[in-house]
Image (cartoon, rainbow, N blue to C red; front, side):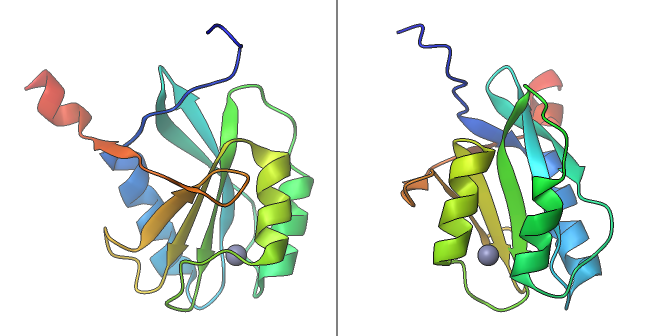
Length: 134
Ligand SMILES: [Zn+2]
């Protein structure tokens, strides 16, 4: 049971909104970042500096990011309305961690999906922290 692997069950609504907002403002370029989690919830996104115009350069920027043990995976945007990963995306997922989010144009609350490194969809609960404390 205690395998030491980070288990994530959700993403905070605030973080999801931030990801969608950055995707919109970066469009038609792609943005990429790394995901951090606390207490099993993705609660932080580390944006990769600079914007890129294609998938490959976004991934190269990700490779230059420092190793951080709280990182549980990656996020990147697709400027086209397509949530499917490419084979290059799948290779990148394996390096970044177990949770990898793709957001796609037009970047609404429905335009995202989380994959595991084998390409299987992971259902993440959107956690509204404000609601909890109300
Ligand atoms: Zn991609």
